[in-house]
Length: 275
Image (cartoon, rainbow, N blue to C red; front, side, top):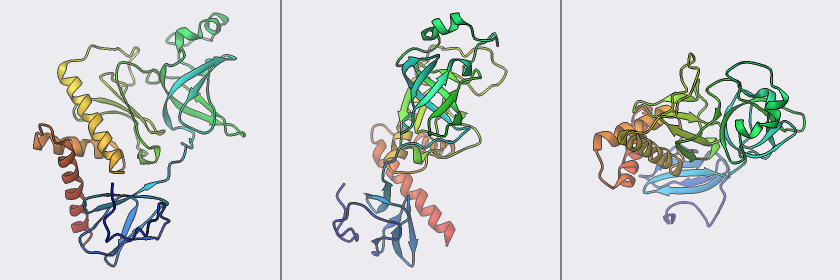
């Protein structure tokens, strides 16, 4: 997107914290920027992104750095030595040991289980797991001990920048439109009709989708996409705000214009509250 001439870009590709972005009236301070005495500055290192009068900084991409207890979504890439190698978009290798998986019978793993590991998870399967521990060499140990973890399928996977994910009390969420969401700390978000929020379940059922469920999941995916494009934080609250706004406007095709209007209105309200 072309930057307007009255921005202080000086042909720079990367901005540092404190760099001046604009001192012209009418511009709005967006994500990763701050306003001071009518001027807009960068609050992080990254590249500039402008939508109409909204100025944002897109942080320079870096790999996901996990922390113990975080929820991640990853893909099985290899099986070896009683463990699965999982790609979670981190610079360090993540592994899931056979003994760290869930069996409904809650029994000890056997040699038969080791021989039949692909019946649990196979290459290219998507799984949801928790960061169990991090070794001295920065390699990552996962676990899926619990029914809400494990293989995920028959849904919509959205990938966003991991730094946009808001850490919340719960990352297994049922949204207001009844879409079930796994909000991965590593920037992967899975949408489906499979409820993983209840603790008293013994089985996760893969149910057929109704037409309305497909529409709701598609719209939720669009909301997440636009939050990502505008570099807004991705949380249950922000997703539901976008969906509620769109639902009230009942758009036919022009989602982009409505979303930009939503962000501008939201920023205007925030500025009025700060005054």
